[in-house]
Image (cartoon, rainbow, N blue to C red; front, side, top):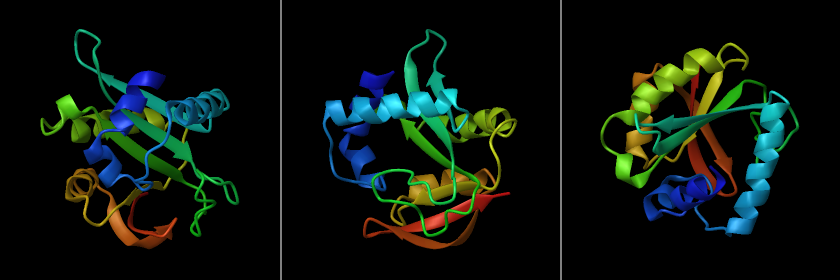
Length: 159
């Protein structure tokens, strides 16, 4: 899954919607991915791969525990690092626009809630209308704004 998630992450539309819009190397992605796999084994991350019937990957949803004082990524700890679980969705370019994200979010959330604490948190660029709609329909409510690495983000939560 490492190489395909790297390819999806480098898609221009994905970069434009990401909290961290700069590109990165495959080696940097491999290092990040290896850390996430260790954190998954430790119960800090839940990773759901979205596949179609022929087992072709179409995207991923990641649920990552927010631990007070622990940086989630190179931007450092969130000023609102108050526990909960941050949710991230990446849909393959070929699978966008068909309604996969809302369905995948709905189905994965019931599994993630068994082991991941609430609230569930989505941090979204204000111009990313598609993600705002997806999370809003899933019951997330805007609770404020945050800034990470100089990027202003909307903070949506679901208890």
